[in-house]
Image (cartoon, rainbow, N blue to C red; front, side, top):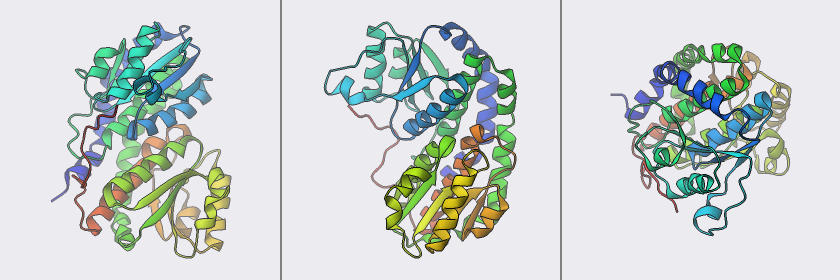
Length: 345
């Protein structure tokens, strides 16, 4: 019998399809009202949603030339010393929309008469109520503790926002292909993902991505920690070279997110360096040469543009966390010590 988590991972193609169909017009209207009313973006989020915000930094920076900053919610909630938000668009991302510290950021933005946007799966939540604009995720009830479908739907919402702010119909058309690429990736993992059992005794690993997939490294590391109790540390390939690579000894597991794109050469060079260090390599890529080097190849659909690849490249990490949890006799649907809604002050 499939776990709830596996079912939710496999729902992602349909969820993204529904999100685009139901929210594209809404996001277009939101973008038309926002154009010219802000100069930069501040995003408040925690956990998985914070990783979506990291994606937004690259996406909106590259295509909209907008600087995106991650909020420091404690300044708003605990210290009561909020920064000046002049000229900002303030976005809150939260699947539940319940966390008081995230809500406090948007509440202060309202006080400073700044536009606010909530990206959430619950349109009746306090976050949604606080925001001037809302993008509902339409992911349905997420029953597994570890977020999967709300993560990819958050990324897709950000892509729609980016496209409409730039009035870029061509990129918007490419987004419509994501469900096909997701299905292909899920199907393609069937041959290799059971080999996650090989890592049932590991205690530590590194997860590495760069550029658009810097966010993916963080999200996969979070899923591995949540589901398997393995200490998984995320890095960019650049930061990893600045010290942490010294932790790599023969057999040390490294998960590398390496789809084709601007960072391909850099990631390939790092992979070859790790081969010389005799690391244990788990490679997420469509590049067959890199997959052939890996002890555990985790293929993704081919021909996904790099800027959209985080919606696809996270799926092998989700499936790896699921299968490793099962191999370690852990409950992937309800990891011990976690709850679905986390309310931080």
